[in-house]
Image (cartoon, rainbow, N blue to C red; front, side, top):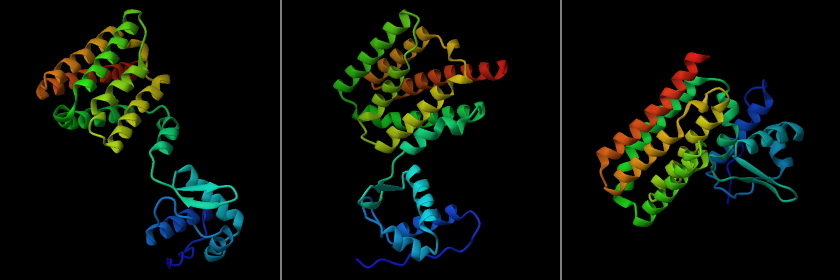
Length: 237
């Protein structure tokens, strides 16, 4: 395959940023797909007009973003898109910003309410049974006064797994992680595990009846509870 030439750098400041942009443009201009082997480091550095150290710095940055993958002794490959780098760095990006967490929760609420109708049309009896089993585990924890973050994450993933929409599934993970990674500045101790368990049980009841309006109402109620926890933390801070 004949490749278009990599674009030379157009500005000197922040050289590693310029290297990253040129490498991304090279991938885009040539329509390189995941798994494609890039030219050798020496060739890339020569085309860019930079040292191999500067090139490697740019490549490492793109590796951390999930754009490239360096395989020792083999070469540099284009990597398939993944939300993992975002997930890995989400906690650092949030810092102590309560407002951003609040906004993420609102986006998640709207997305789930908008997508749940499709789940009701596709969900199987086996999926509902798995939701019930997850809620039962929540109940066992709640009765002992324990929280159940893992079951909460699994529950919301199960609601939409029947759609086989990988991007949406990862978005749910991101929004879930955003909230629980923020637990150092959102006081999750104020969450009532019994009320949270009952909220999820009511959602399953409505899902089993295929009652879209009731499912959406129950989801809204669930997220209103989360928003109250955030609001209380803001008032206390």
